[in-house]
Image (cartoon, rainbow, N blue to C red):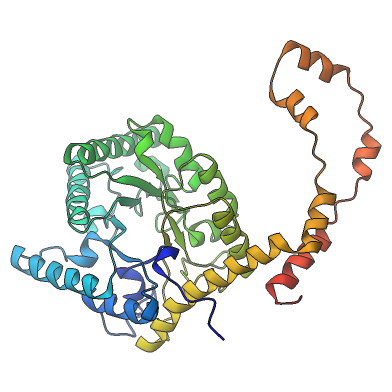
Length: 394
């Protein structure tokens, strides 16, 4: 029997050089695996994707590909071997980003730093990352402000910090237009790590910022499962808000237990029900962007197990995609949803479009509150049937 969960390029699955290439280092321990070159990462993902070439592409931070301080000759050699590996594996680059958080120069932030020279360096570094990404055909530029925040509120004026951030994004949008790169910028939120108090801690913060930018049409968001879950937030709701605003430009898939450090576990491995509703939303809303697995294999994994990790991310997504179709087609689910929902086009029209007549009609209506309160809402049964579908019970 053919395996129904084999990925193909149509699934638009991508990984980062820093994900499968992670050597097993964590905040408390040294690497447990040998470092991989960019070309070796591509080869590993080609193995994970199998004969179907199921991995669409590989993404990178600027210095994941070309280390800081590399000579032009060294940079050309690295890019050459990476390009050759991509061609052989039939992969491409979908997204590029700049590392503005690791280097000590960014100890107080990048775009929001109090030091004008650091801010200028950060913008320059992004411009060069955009140039590098454009060489490989990237059309999405992600920005995660890993050091944009404070430990003590006296350090920065938060309004001025936001203005600095806004000016930097505006500048980079203009640079993209000037160079005809056609980038779409995706802003990535994260609460309370690694700074004590992060600016733009949630996806909603960025969605509120975007309309104030010079080129709001070029800027969207890149929500990440772990970043919202680590603060106890509902990631599916964040993605729904971004979709409704037309601003889901990219999405980072992994998993995370609440209250832990940023774990970046294999997609769906911690909370499969939450992952199910996320996949259901993306698929039913027709999201046509990349599904990027920003996750790391366990520190205990060897190279073969890293391949299994990458396969597992893709396989779980496809299994949950299939489960979403079964959920929508299930007769019990259909019956419950029909019972739960009480539609009325007339009432919706009355409440959603203001006219003087609609207002007067609404004010004159009498509602039976006891009857409204008595209507059954069998959510327990709905949730149990959802669990049964997830667990494979017919």
